[in-house]
Figure 1 (cartoon, rainbow, N blue to C red):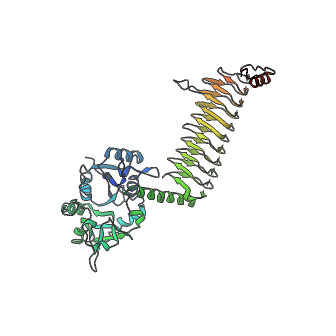
Figure 2: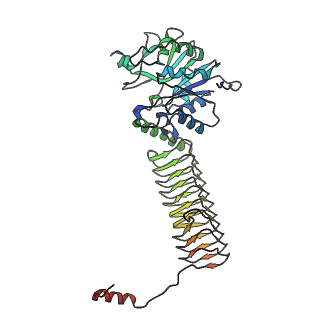
Length: 476
């Protein structure tokens, strides 16, 4: 069993337990609830990340349904983080889930914060406020929130003139207790010794026959006491179904949009903007409506990203003009480029400084050198294109022979005439001219003119004779 890593010198100890074992039956999907994505991340990533930001080391994630997938997703998203994983084989309640983490914290003495894996909107500030609330002798602090409609939540009952006395789950509550609007938010912090000693006293004598973590409050009230910290419902309400998920995604996206605008980015319509967590955009960039930025996309300063464009895991330099409805996936765009409208840059497409790629041009695993242009209706795949190259309308690199992909190499300063078909593997030397309408299967030397057309034949009067025959009914 791994032992918790030591805190750095001078810091206060803190450990965290994130509950992520549930299936989430109300989601009505095969995927475990905490694996549903919010702004490009699995939902459980966010409470785990907040715990790490608050200084928790280690963070123990309690998994159950699709536990291997949850662990793999978090290790991929947070490489090197001090994460431990504990299994809750049977879903016997939240107290039972926390007890599953006990072995991973063997030997730890200090506060333990307990979070729910389905609260992606929790902020580090709110988490820190609950962690720091135990300023007196209390052994337990927990978060509460006020809801207009508290149905489904445990009600927080206060003793007259004292602090919180207990949390009553709705199925166990009296009609009077169900009128209480202050409810449990599912976020706790307790001393490790108190936590394990007290959880040993929790039983399942309730309507759901489950071991409730909420029983900690009543047990603390009988001893050193508990303190309740009111938090924002937006942050603390869990995601229980797909409608909740959509609302969480929208709220997270609005946070990202707000942060970008505060950093100098112009969003023409923040309500019609989508971005994943971790996207970066430089100042003085303008983003038009209905743009989506996904994955690890980074955009420089002074750019314009046109309406309806989608960028995934793409790097864009400074002063780039991207016209509407472009789709870029794992591409690189250099400074001062102009892309679009309706351009598609597939994986490993790379544009050097000042390149122009226009409407209905598709690049795949292709690099274009400085100031080169492909302004209309072209497919360039598995190609290396030099600087100052003009690629005419309708040009195609025939890179696939049905079994293998083959490269096309075009030197600096080449002029590729419209409707050229370059059958790979082929190399075009520096400064060559390719005549329009050519189909080329052989290499072209530097400075040469290449023509690959069929010989033109004109038959004078043919059209008139055909028309006369059709009129007379003698044929076509």
